[in-house]
Length: 198
Image (cartoon, rainbow, N blue to C red; front, side):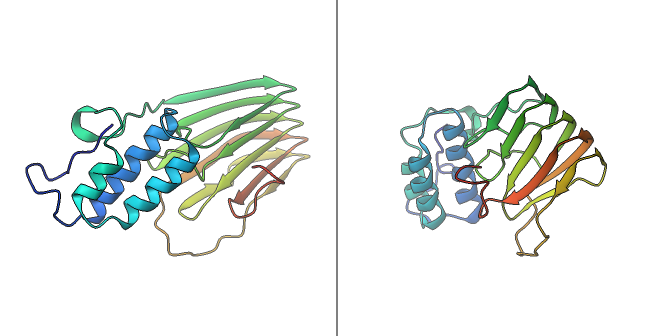
């Protein structure tokens, strides 16, 4: 997972580009998802990566991480992730890798997907929901757009955060389809957590 200077053969003293910084942030996020970095270490290193001025400073941030051919993040992105539960709660938190599709089957339970600190490697997530008497909670951040227009709700509540144009580029579009009855879907930004924890 180590990032060598992306412009091979050039001096580590050369100035880093936005693309160089973004590559290192991706690698660090992947390392956190693998359990190689704690949340505190991830925060510290991402902050350093975003303010790094040279390729050498960036390389130092990943020097203790395993090398991946091609210098990209070692993240396994699944096509489909299934959650099936009854009377239980499931949470995807810091560093989880967002799949391309999720199939959620839940009765009398709660599913929380924290997209704020997730590893996002592509631009779309499709959630196929079949939920009864439970709650689906999505924690978002600027750049994540959630569409619940195709969700069928019976005796249920769908609450989405008011759209605010922050100027951030869209990094992930989440489309929620399927059906929910006697429950709720709540979409909220990370700045407004669900109680103590999202």
